[in-house]
Amino acid sequence: MKLFWALPIASLVLVGCRDRSEAAAERAPFPFQIAIVTAEGFEGGDGARGAEELIRRYGRAPEGLIRHISFPSGAGVLQEPYLSNLARLAVDPGIRAIVLCPAVPGTAELFSRIRTGRPDILLFAGEPQGALLPIQAAADLVVGRDFFARGFTMSWAAKELGARTFVHISFPRHLSYETVGLHLQALEAACKDLGLAFAAETVPDPASPGGRSEAQRFILEMVPRWILKYGADTAFFCTADSLAEPLIRQLLAHGGMLVETDLPSPLLDYPEALGLELATDAGDYPAILKRVERAVVDQGGASRFGTWAYGQCYAVTAGLGELAKRTIGAGVSHLDFQGFKDCLAAYTPGTQWRVEPYVDPATGVRARNHFLIYTDTFIMGRGYLPTTRLRTGNR
Image (cartoon, rainbow, N blue to C red):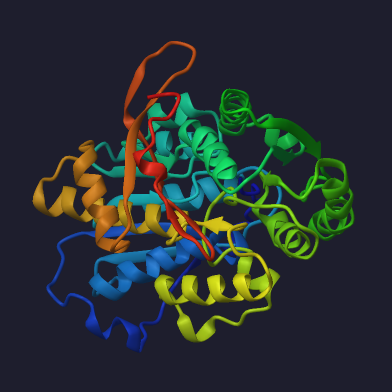
């Protein structure tokens, strides 16, 4: 789960100049534009690549279809200057859709403000981090990873790799999030059903006064102790992606497994943990996955580490941008499951996706505009596990 951010008004940056990679973009004039909003740096790397791929295909505004907005991330909640800036963005009648990924707390208020003056605009929220009912009410479509199903698929995958214990790593702030709490419940229940021991460990919050560096040092110190405590046949999961890099590095050195990170991607954490420089591979996910897999296997991690073939936020951002284009330009329903799967497939060739509706666990009510997604887990040195073909506990 990603950190929140505070955004001073001067930090909102409209990404400008075109580059040679956009030469292959569609040149047909578009009578509308789509705004793609992503974070900068670690939190937004995959999302920004999704926006870049949309720009490569359709061009950058004002000549092309896509207006990409990036902003720095940090600790905090959405601030008033950020809400006001994005609300003003929607004043432009040429912008017919806004895709925001990740949709941090405050997105529901932002969308409600925009909707007041622009009832015609499409508002898509990727990877919601706040309370779910408000964002479902404010957005036309919400898409995020399937925290219910992944509680089962990650436990099942861990057992397939030989794990006897599953350890969940988090801290109070993340545990207060609705999605994290639901995933934790599903994970613990699935471990019980599958015969895996379950344990939870608490680590410092990367957004605390000591910051990310203190939390990472804690991980570096504790992993060898956890391996002694739980054994090498233990799978670990951490709710903070910013802490996955030291976790991967220490598991490679001391034993243990990591089925998936919270936001699975071969571009998040693995390159840093493995000492890989991937600048030449740009957004080529298949090439990046091959290099990451080779490095993991070379360091003795075969059949112990997994990820998704394409970054989660890349797929959601690009898929929602494509869906907005098809909805506005071709009349495709934004609430059609297969239509969204087709959009995902257009940006993640060769990848199987499972798309399901969100069902409120308390009421059993199915949300018509909230899709939960996941894909098959790729295990380094072994290949894909068929997680999308499993009958998960909430289906």
